Image 1 (cartoon, rainbow, N blue to C red):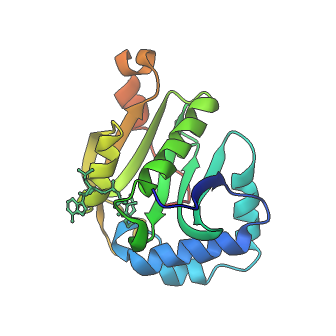
Image 2: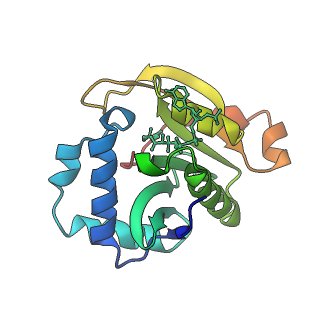
Length: 192
Ligand SMILES: CC(C)(COP(=O)(O)OP(=O)(O)OC[C@H]1O[C@@H](n2cnc3c(N)ncnc32)[C@H](O)[C@@H]1OP(=O)(O)O)[C@@H](O)C(=O)NCCC(=O)NCCS
């Protein structure tokens, strides 16, 4: 891991920084996300401070920024799915190409999982584009297993297909016969 690289939860004042890193992610990896660069770039400017403030505090939503010497070089978003509130869902993960395969992605995932545990979630789930093998390998290394898909996401303007993965956060959840069903409950959040 490079010197000066750290992960922190976003602050309410980080709206412009969130916009910068999210647009960098969408410019770099349009195939990984269902939201588009043009769609995100067109958001009203007051949307970004609102999103940062929502993710800066509380148990429902957190965004973590990866920074090198104070400059944003990655992010991950975690939110509470309204139809499966005992879970948290990972989305919008990105690390800049210059810091891939350095453990930076692990820092982001560990921050997200640690936060999900700290707020009492029983598991974490995510959607990943079917051809995104690098991301799938990263998630599998952290213990995620595929639970459904691939299926086409009709909210995705490009019609890409995604598979869903989940990770129980405690032994009771791992042993529960209802875990997979709950992890597959409908997805309702706007992030991704
Ligand atoms: C996904 C992402 C955050 C992972 O970051 P990273 O630093 O590359 O992560 P890792 O160091 O864990 O490396 C990824 C793994 O994929 C492997 N990999 C890399 N490119 C690959 C490819 N084209 N095909 C298959 N595996 C690949 C690496 O060898 C590594 O596997 P390993 O753990 O067995 O060694 C980063 O690639 C990224 O930002 N991608 C663009 C955005 C994205 O896809 N986000 C995820 C949305 S769900």
